[in-house]
Amino acid sequence: MIKETISKLLNEQVNAEYYSAYLYLSMAAYADRAGYKGIANWLHVQAKEEMAHGTRIFQYMLERGALPSLGGIKAPPASYSGITEIFEKVLAHEQGVTESINRIATLAEQEKDHAAYQFISWYVSEQVEEEASAEELLTRVKLIDSHSGLLFNLDTALASRVFTDPFGR
Ligand code: FEO
Image (cartoon, rainbow, N blue to C red; front, side, top):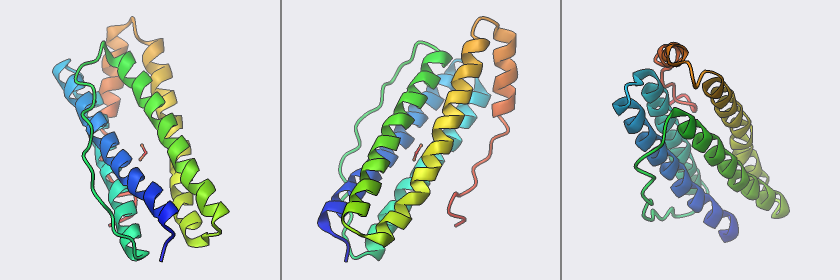
């Protein structure tokens, strides 16, 4: 049985991961309507990954004898000023997620819950990748911000991203 303090943070993280999916879906809608289908595709795949992240934590709670409690998911912003703002917000959001994942890892360590620590370590590593890819895309978008032809090249490149379940299910 997992300690309630850890279970509470895991439960909050399930909600945060589903909120991430909502956020990326709202960004995908904006990108799609702005004509950037490739960027919309990248964001759709990102949203699916977030759903997988949340569902894996939900399952883990059940495996450890905790009862996940699903709360409301707040509404994400509905409009954006452009593609640059989208990737600025992706990066800021992922940095926030890293902080919440680190809080869980720190608590699992303090509580000497080695299983929970090992479980959340996957997410610690994942956040390194999440921040790196958001940072890279933001840098590229800023570099090409004033050259719409190049932005369309990036859009074409991002159209090829496909979802693969990070947990291999
Ligand atoms: Fe679930 Fe984007 O971290």
